[in-house]
Amino acid sequence: MDSEQRPDGPPEAVTSRTAVAAPARILVTYATRHGSTAEVAEWIAQELRDAGAAVDVAPVVAGPRVGDYQAVVLGGPMIMGWHKGARRFLRAHAGTLATVPTALFITAASLTETGEDAIDGIPVVKDPWLVKELRTPGKPTRKERYARPDHYLKAAREAAPDVRPVSVAFFAGSLDLTSMNLLEKLFIMLVIGATPGDARNRKAVRQWARDISPKLHGA
Ligand SMILES: Cc1cc2nc3c(=O)[nH]c(=O)nc-3n(C[C@H](O)[C@H](O)[C@H](O)COP(=O)(O)O)c2cc1C
View 1: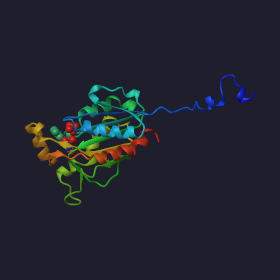
View 2 (view 1 turned 30 degrees about the vertical axis):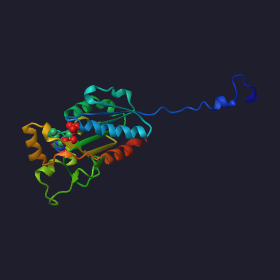
View 3 (view 1 turned 60 degrees about the vertical axis):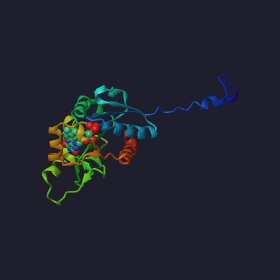
View 4 (view 1 turned 90 degrees about the vertical axis):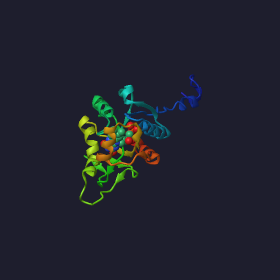
């Protein structure tokens, strides 16, 4: 039959029914002690939205429904180890997170440059404002050994060995001594040796989000 004679309308009406893919739904979820990691999560979410995804941001304590998303970004600060809320979330949802693209980010006050760009085959990205070279090459101090990327990531790997993140980022955080008790201040001074203040690097955070965006879409 000639297309012009079709009873269901002109050919244009048929050809204009092109399928438009729904934007990927991405969850950005985070743990925080003093709030600064929440803002880092928002910066990441904004960049992913700019790249076309539909993004929800939620703290892990709100219990977001991981199964509703095609990809997940999970972050949290180092608080004498990776924040236990982030670890707990990773462990609880390990089964689902092992089946969707998952990226992790860790905010911190101190990180030792080890020269590696992957840990256990997982790509790692280090914020240049955070990472520090060894003071004496080849002779790491106790603080420098503590702040190694592989040491910081160990808890996450143990919490969910089957989750292989598409990327792990280490970002400079914000250290507010006034909101810490004496024990915490001592830990920061003696174990971390970090300088108080807001060292967050919005540009590095947004760049990482732009870089991982295709991987979260399964590309
Ligand atoms: C009690 C305490 C322990 C911390 N432990 C570490 C640590 O082990 N390594 C590190 O690099 N930073 C450590 N930090 C720095 C935090 O990771 C950093 O300040 C982070 O940005 C805090 O994020 P938040 O504001 O979301 O809680 C610690 C901070 C606090 C308050």
